[in-house]
Image (cartoon, rainbow, N blue to C red):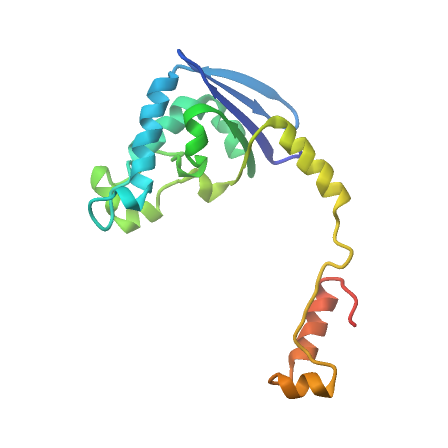
Amino acid sequence: MKPGELLLYVLPAKEQTFVLAITAKSADLRVAPITSSTLQQQVDTLRRQLDPTLWKNSLEPFDRALAHAMFEELFEPLKDRITKSSTIYAVTAGPLQSLPLGVLVVEPPKGGIAGNSVPDALRSTDWLARSHAIVTLPSFASLQLLRALDKTRAASNPFLGIGAADSDAARLTRRHLPSARRELAALSTLLGSDVS
């Protein structure tokens, strides 16, 4: 792992849930006292609230207290590691595969139950996605594969700008934008690409 990155592996089991947190300098295994069936019920509740096809009204409340309780049950002992990271790579199993971790709430939500449908209260909620880039991976090995591809797939030309016609024929068939050539050249120079 690179500095600022955290790999979370969450494995629900019949009687508890295992949470493995790996950073560049440490690895911690935690056993959360939440069963797979309880986790399934919680995920189902939040998923219903996220799916507009299941709403009875134009806006259904989202249970921020439940989303916070799930965060606490699963990740509270690892909160220090989470808050020190900027990117979370998440490998989940079971019920959590169908819930984006970004909807979990890090701090207790303000506004109570009434705040669950108040736009200002929702905006001020400390969603995990607000403070972290969250990448969901199918397995540990996929991160290693992505890193290997990242090293081998650098773009040979980091910028391709199209919009300034060179020929008279092209100028006749398209509306000419007088500053397009200058703007494309400036972008190309800024991004370290050759102007051609």
